[in-house]
Image (cartoon, rainbow, N blue to C red; front, side, top):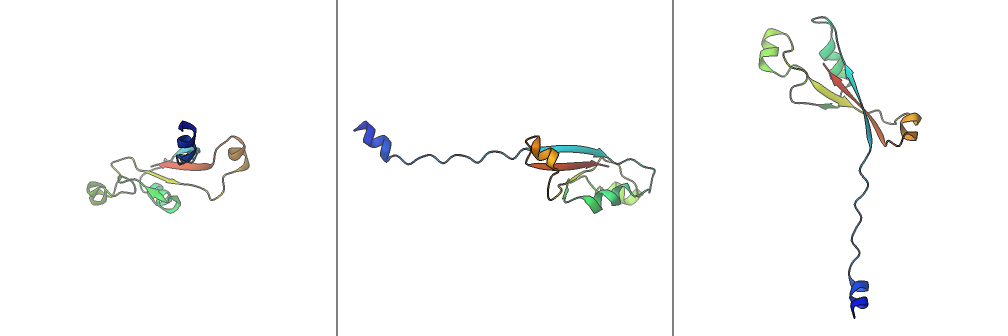
Amino acid sequence: MAENEAAAAPAEAEAPPAERVLNVNVGILGHVDSGKTSLARALSKVVSTAALDRNPQSVARGITLDLGFSAFRPDEPPLSVREAGYDALQYTLVD
């Protein structure tokens, strides 16, 4: 009877494998008012809460007081990234 019970039990669903993402950190450096934040804003799809001069003191003074982190992924990762076993490539911008 134990064999029949085991056969009747529903099979557990396997969890899908986690996506492997190669992350590349890119620091954006430049002089005051050289367009660092504008560049990060133009490239990014994912933005942190501190990114892109959202801090009220930054806006009032016209400067960035905190590091901002934002990210984007190319639609198709390069072949070398896929051959290395990664599913996606992500660039994280630090400005």
